[in-house]
Figure 1: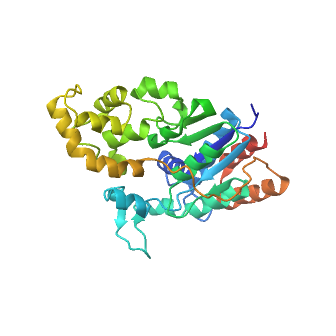
Figure 2 (figure 1 turned 180 degrees about the vertical axis):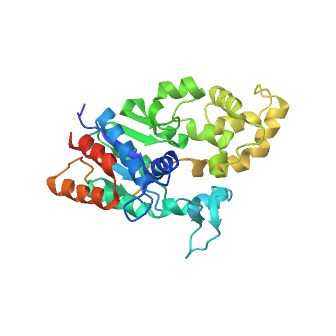
Figure 3 (figure 1 turned 120 degrees about the vertical axis):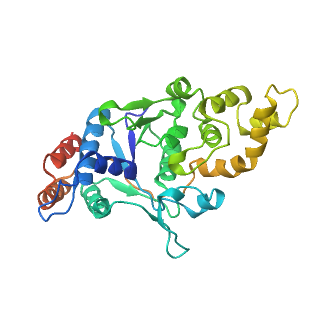
Length: 308
């Protein structure tokens, strides 16, 4: 077993959390809000200090609402759209202006610290994470508040999720054992489970009349979506007439939604060095940014963790 460990950041999920966790009155000397930047640095410092990765990557949403997912499920993230786009002008996500102005600063700070920001055309950070987790030659920690990424958990390959959904003071390390205890499904079953249950936060309605407990029970009995829908069409499968009818009515939706729910695991990503290496040059650049943007102790804590 290698002594290296890769940490993958669901970057947007983390800077959104940072933005909402700290008032936007936290500003740079020129008045620019920097609460998301400072909060993200605090998160990075905390995570690197506690989990001691040797490698770190900031996974990026090159497309927050990929066209191919919308073609499969038109309602996908539709509630977050500010204006409808076209092939030339993609949909615009509703993001507070005070956060939008900070995203270039986030990229600047990550670059200064030597943390690679990795994205892929027409794909979300989830897909970048899925690919890197599937191809890594070392244990992987995925940091996110998004439960969709529970599907990448793999105890055999030492891939786990560090969930920030309950806040940074109450992190949850999610393994296959945790998933089975919490939801009654394995990581491999999680996309089927999420497809049946739906997810309002992503605009996925799920199969009407099939909630979380029912979805888990169905997958426990019939293993996957194919087995569930085969049972819905089979007399004597043990399903009630009403439940079987709901599943038959929802099958077309579920078949379209499942590929949208699954994270991509075979993207052609650039070969990037993810090794944490805080050189003197990087440290000097980071300190200069600290002074320019008034990042204070947040940058100090990140530098201390990365330098250790």
